[in-house]
Image (cartoon, rainbow, N blue to C red; front, side, top):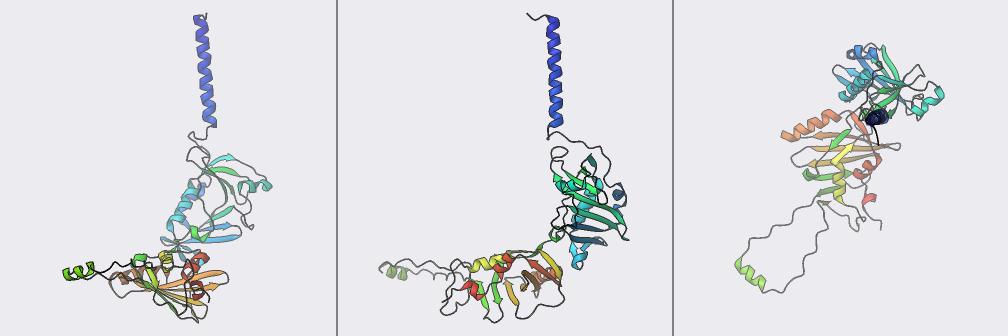
Length: 368
């Protein structure tokens, strides 16, 4: 039988064990709330953030520079193409708020394990970020590495970092996910359309007759019912049902003599491919593309503008430029918006998208 003083001792020991276990669990549990009391990663950046004039990102040997122009941001390496202002702000705030948590390796040959290797090397995953003021003075020069999710507790990610001139690495708070890919810095939407508003599409290829794709007309309306006709119809022998139409929402205005569409080819899919066109890259366009290597695609919409696309190959890349025309009302307003965003620029688009919209006769018709 346990005596009172023995029971009290056992209870105290059990309570101490529970407290110890909870403490060990909390210290090892990745879902526990994180707390970082380290020093600021870039203390001077926070003080000078309003004087930032440019951000330079190097990754895998490629460099992209975003520079401030008044209240806007532009891509210096793409002749001043507009950048998303929120992209620069997000990066700068994340860097200014980052705090150093734990020191990591300072051995140069181990930095690649944290994706902190030399960013100028081919295929490097590390990202060197130089922040310059409006006069070109370097405010910060750092290398950002691998993300570590929940590094400081649930939903509190971190990243491995180092100063560009040093090999000492750190686990720091924040994760701006910055890259040197142009698509992360600009609005990638080149053009969007609603297929229900498209009236016709003309595809002109050098050396070929144009292809005209038009909206399939609705079936003819039945004439008003007539009692006499109904009686006569009732006495007629039954007729077999009409064959269903093979046309979709769109059709070729004229099928060339002796030609047959390839299996699986529909005009609907060609028109619908114009629903969303996104860029992979962008460059300045000095003159309207012309010549035997240029496809001209004209998209006409009901109540909207007519948009003319020019598609051409440059090596293995497909480049697209466009202009819009509208005479009045919403058509003119939409055309002006499209031209303001795209005039003077040529956009590299994915090869699969170029194949969807830039059809040739050989793509559509079976060979005899």
